[in-house]
Length: 523
Image (cartoon, rainbow, N blue to C red; front, side, top):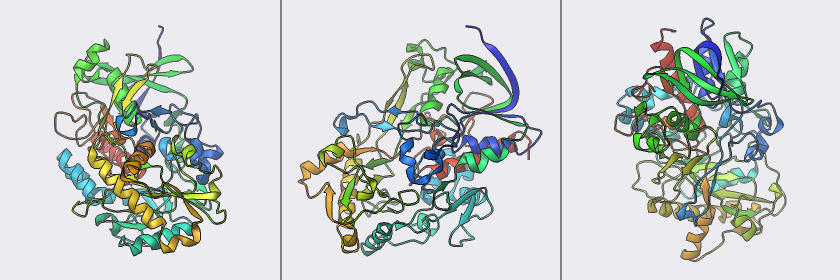
């Protein structure tokens, strides 16, 4: 194969998602630094991305990598989809738009795992304040108002969201004015989530907030529809990447560093294809080992979402804003230190491939609403495997949802709690009848859970930060044993955060940019 040589850049950022887009933008702030940003997907300026109300239309489209899990035994052998953004802005351009920073305990745990206090809650709180342009209740201690990423509360939310807040509060889940304020330092709360939406429905993404404002700069090169296939290594030093665009392979070189921000499936894939991973697994695929890191691809974590507890409206109610205007955090067991449940309102009849026809759910989103139970501190773990030694060979993702019985127990409690809320007095004006699941025997409810559980679209943790033998990066996001290569995306999480993962990934991107600037003398 003839390989063309490409230009040389100071930094190459692979992936334009919630982390990578931030890294590239922040590095390109210095006009003397040449930055290349590579995105496998295309232009994000389409209605399905721009209009926050129709975000689910991106799932399964060309803006989705369309990964799926291997059959999960605990899901009755189902193969749940694992959506991930494949477009400028990555997941921030196609997701459900809930901005949830994570709980205090998450980051204290990260700091301990990395043996680095810069990942502590106090430290990341200051990073979040620099990121945010918060248009909501004032909280100078916790919220930023001068950052590039606009955030607000949904304007004129669906009245069912307000009723859910009242109902949850009556059950002892305190209503919070700001779910990213003091609420994320305690035992749980309910309320209207923060969303990056301007006006009635204009999505704010990493593409619009970070990348597009710099794309006219001559020192930032953004290339779309281009896959990163491999990191080029000279000994144990990363010197460039091999990319493929329109069938043509090219090598581009980095003077300083390469940053992988390809997400929790493609980041470990590219690492392994580059000879970085478990020696035994790589040898079976005839991949020459460069660095033995057995944790690459392991520790796969994802929030588990149940589709869901569903009610029919007495009269149609069209979705508004991001179509998910209520959420709450609660404990399935009062002895837990951190809330482990995060159900979310879906302003439609939200069912799985099995339960949608089984319960004859309506297609028109204005006819029904769902309170979908979610588990945000799962014990189940999975793994990402290669199936071949070429980038075009698909990965095998064993998500192993509900493989740990503690997750089953927690979600059964979550279903019961959602049904109690949905059938309570504050929701009666919005309920004609319960569509799903209804009152079931214990055995049937367990089967309903297995037929309904799937992803919350929050795949993470497959190249974790830490100091143990399964860690892939250190606290400065450097890949162990490899010079000039860092990872900045959700794969570096030692444990998944308590809540939607977009905000932590943006924070990871900002922290990575800060570290890179400092380590390369760019401050």
